[in-house]
Length: 260
Image (cartoon, rainbow, N blue to C red; front, side):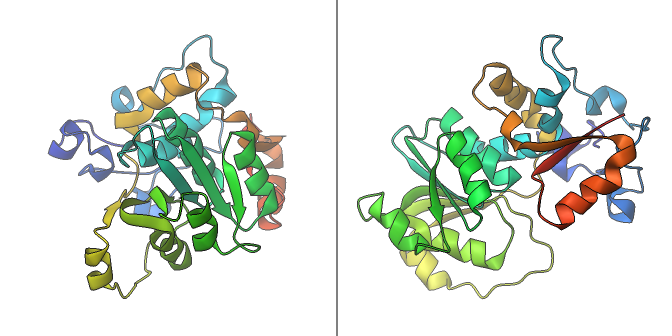
């Protein structure tokens, strides 16, 4: 939730809003209740609500308020060119949308790196080339698919030190790494001399400024350029929400849609 009036909001950096709050995130998010309820209070509602087109069903629009737009944003700030190979480290929900958005911005080839076959299968459904990092060395696999150079752009969509290392290892010299995955307390010794010599462009996405990008992301869905439906593995009534959490806990679900 953002105010829409502060300097950061006016510049389009809505995730840096001076009154930034997040639904259901406890004290960190400003103490607002979550959305797994029949009714919620939305502060600055004139800024924080997006009208869904009448010809679009709710499920297609659902993820525009979160991970779909995050993936779109990650690709948008990457500077993708039509001849580029884009590698996405992580084939979870955010990586799934990063892979689709890379195509929206003209990537010639999209590679998806992960260790879970089910997630890689989802990436393949939307046109990405799957690389199972448990079975293949990621650096060698990406190199083989890029004439030995490495990917022009790598989007890190996990939020782990090992995923960041993989991103740096698989990007070509002079390439771009976009860090979309969320980091909180992690720290890393950075070999600045190596990064400098390789002329790497490393961009930290931070929290997605959803309000700045959600209309463009919604249009991509409406135009059929991004398909959110494969990410939904289960649909449950709100009363069965605990079952949804059990599915997540046992890694049997990708995304669960709850209906009132």
